[in-house]
Image (cartoon, rainbow, N blue to C red; front, side, top):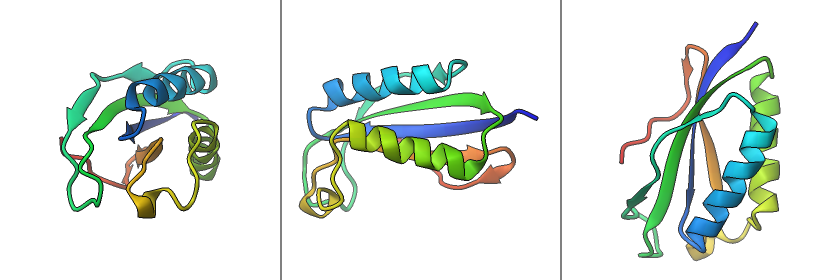
Length: 110
């Protein structure tokens, strides 16, 4: 059974390059992904004042939620994300699963 999902990705460091890399990797892994418009946003309660480039997408999958989250972590690492970066205000790539079927996991407001 296919499940409808939404995601949001964002970067505040080499953002255009990192969004493009994540975009390509996600398109390869989730061939039916449908992208929203990319937007520049100001950080909220974050130590680095650099703007974020964010983009949302929706897709259908037969993968379990834990498989999707592992895929996102793998793509974040391929984009250069390190565990200590966020505490320094560096976000090379952050991919959040916003919803999985009827389950709402996070809410994003631009």
